[in-house]
Amino acid sequence: MKFVLKGPFKENVYSLMRKAGYYFQGKDEEKSELIFIRPPKGYPRFHLCLKIENDNLIFNLHLDQKRPIYKGAPAHAGEYAGETVEKEAERIKQILEYEKRSRTSNYN
Image 1 (tube, helix red, strand yellow):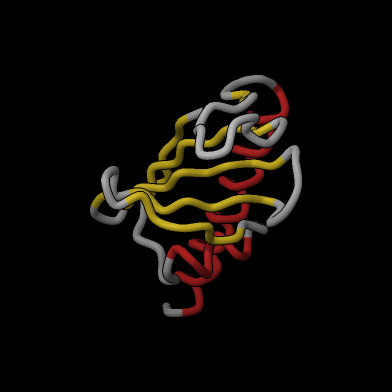
Image 2 (cartoon, rainbow, N blue to C red):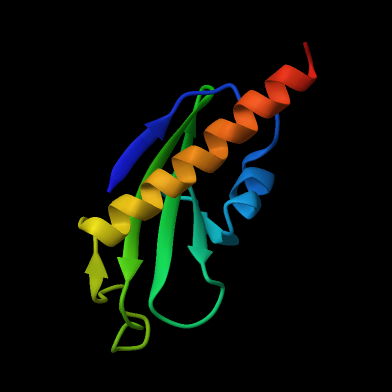
């Protein structure tokens, strides 16, 4: 599921994602995306690819139901839509919008 949150945000993306319960897993240099997961170990888990364009955050979220079967293979049982993924996207939006509002009001 893809969604966009418009910035600017006062905190860096790593801090924002930690507040949403996500752990940084790495960076995809080819796609210029930051990879986050929640929870940090085990399955099922949410897998989030995040791209930063100007002040906006572009999210690509899915739910990994299980570990890839073959070592080194990117294929897995992932859900890219549905109620669980939609609820998680909404939860992320609420947390980050709250952070944006509360941080902005602290500087006025």
